[in-house]
Length: 420
Image (cartoon, rainbow, N blue to C red; front, side, top):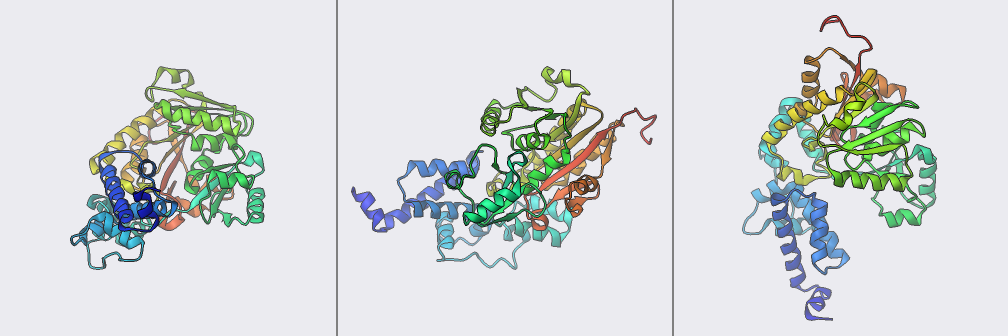
């Protein structure tokens, strides 16, 4: 054993210094790079020879600093942010008393984001939301209906001593007390292709709003790596077809791998340059349903991706509004008369949500809004998740990530005026 490893084995200060150095580098990368925090963490761990306990400590301190960084920096007195975060997660220090501080500082939010939430929700609701996004998100998985459904999987988990319970809203979801690795799931026979997919309960509800029927032709316009595509394929059963499109080949390659692993064959994966790509022209007014899971700020995922606090810019979020509206306009042309258009984001900002739908509806007379509550009720889901005609999920209310969804239907006949 060399000297460095011997010192780490004995718990010498050099190990603590190494963790502080790693954490400092990670926090610098969060600002300068766009990679998700968990990817940055894995890359950092791969560069150093540290034990499993040190890896856990580094991970806890990293995400603690991301969640509470602004408040921690406010209370710094000669120590680095990395050192203070390590001290907090090991019990050597506590978060500063924040009761008298401005709300954005208290919850380590960008000023503009707090102001938007306060404007949209009022002070008390915004405060509850700010508190909730600083908590760890639960580990939700979705169970394939085609492979036996949730009750069978819950029974197997109970026999294996895995603590889990049904998700309160989604009929396909299971909430696990602790996240399990693929290896641990495999040991219990729960890793067979397509049986379980890690997916937040709120995300599962988006696919349920599409409500695909046997034989439908469904387009997932912004499919990404395919979480919702796989769920739609499961809901559609063995009939019908899904066209999964995206402009990023790397994401679609990951989707192809997931489809192969799950044994799904009725999904066609299509790389497009943009939402009006000529490859989609043949689908004009032919699709029974189109899902637009639009690119957005991702503010609804702050519990899982606290690094977004360090990156979100107000101007960038406003720019998403126009991108989302363009996607919705293009998607509308693909929907058949009587067909369904579902618009969704993982955003907690009205500018990306209902304001996009309102702008779309103001510019045409071919669609009507379907009340989300009625669609949820048909599937036995609590309708309190609906906010007026739309669905808005809030971490502090529904204990899911933050999601918005609107369901629109193309009219079978052209109305005689905008007010028909």
